[in-house]
Length: 264
Image (cartoon, rainbow, N blue to C red; front, side, top):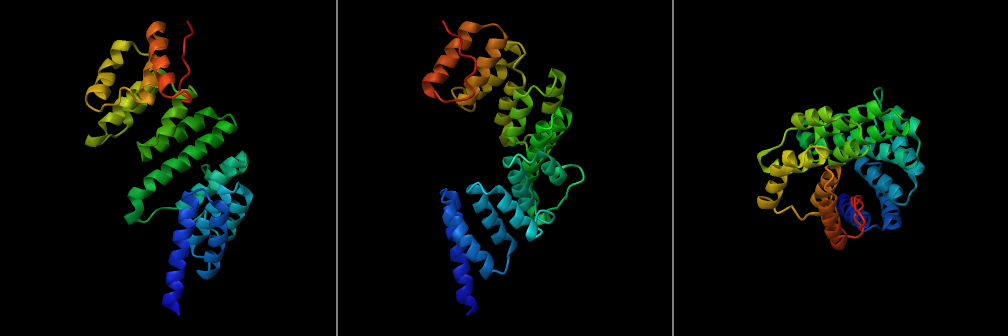
């Protein structure tokens, strides 16, 4: 009966979500495929199946599934997964057609607006990566800045802008000033200020490192250590940069941010 069918589908959704979370993508695909049939193509179930395909590196298959059910034009989540598929498949032109200025722009319901911020930021990051792939750095930088306007927690956008040298010093400062941080997010402002000020004098960012140490206990965090070591390196304090990077290496030898180890 209908009640039993609903219970079965809810159990299947639980199994699929657990399989995705645990990296058991073939299991996720197997059960999500049955779920899509049982629910007659419920959009959330189709999306679960697409994510299973992505986990199995079947990017074109996932994109085909989403397109057949016409989801990228109506769902932010589907648009994000479709964009991810095209990026992983290195189909950059198609990615720009989908996520570029003329692509679909599904909107979230008012009740989902807060949750949608992260999705909108992710879509902007994907758009920026597509623009970078076709060497349009200006458009890429605009996309990454837009990502941060949607969600200040989109650290990947900050990292791409800084590590790929996409902004001038004045543009970095303007970006920092444009971001809105809540009262409980001031630690994030300190972290971003340190990341964006790597060419500034040590004195200019000292208060930010002090706050991260004394107020938030984040001074010995790997990201903070790497950022300060880089800052010291660009200020020609090679001995202190060496000390911090050596400390970071001892703590986390596989940290990819550990770029400024000065050999003695």
